[in-house]
Image (tube, rainbow, N blue to C red; front, side):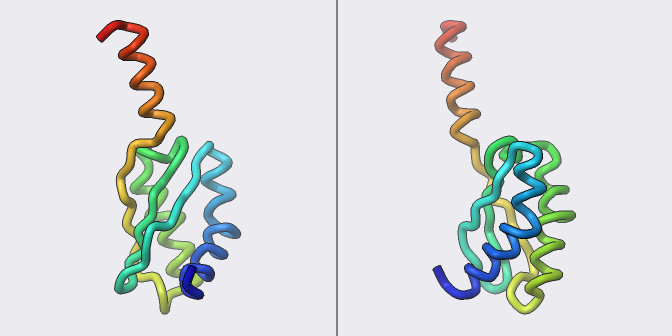
Length: 97
């Protein structure tokens, strides 16, 4: 892990992850390219209708405030959580669809 990513992870651990975990969520960093940090929202945050708002008001705001020289924008990579895949499998199996 690069020194820049370690600094980003430290801010996420202190300022972002506690708030996400309080709602059953988590965040994972993917990469930093040209001032854009790509992240995945996991757990209850994955696919949440408020994910974009969470990203803008919490994740991006905290990182830009703490590390303006590194992070200009945060982009969420849309993923489907393992929990959601398992729920879909159960529904299909249980209802013989």
